[in-house]
Amino acid sequence: MLQPLRCPVCGRSSIEPVLQKITVQAHSADFHGEIGGLRMYRCTELGHIFFVRKADLEDENPQTMAS
Image 1 (cartoon, rainbow, N blue to C red):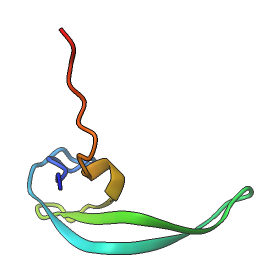
Image 2: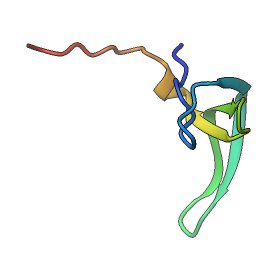
Image 3: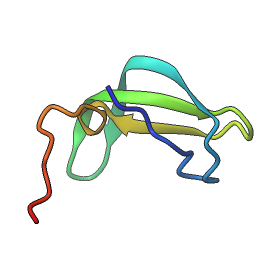
Image 4: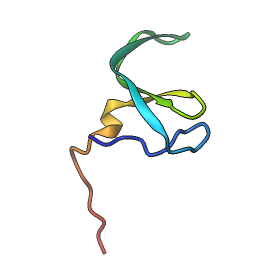
């Protein structure tokens, strides 16, 4: 499994995983329910918290660039 390289808020490269299996309750005018498949990370320098979809971290279908 891949890991994010930098904090998307400050751009620093010191991040660590916090929670591996979480669900989030989302509410909007068009949607109400759980969103799963998220990973939570923390910037160890400035404490930023961010979420990444688990599917974006998995390299199940690697694409090759055609020349």
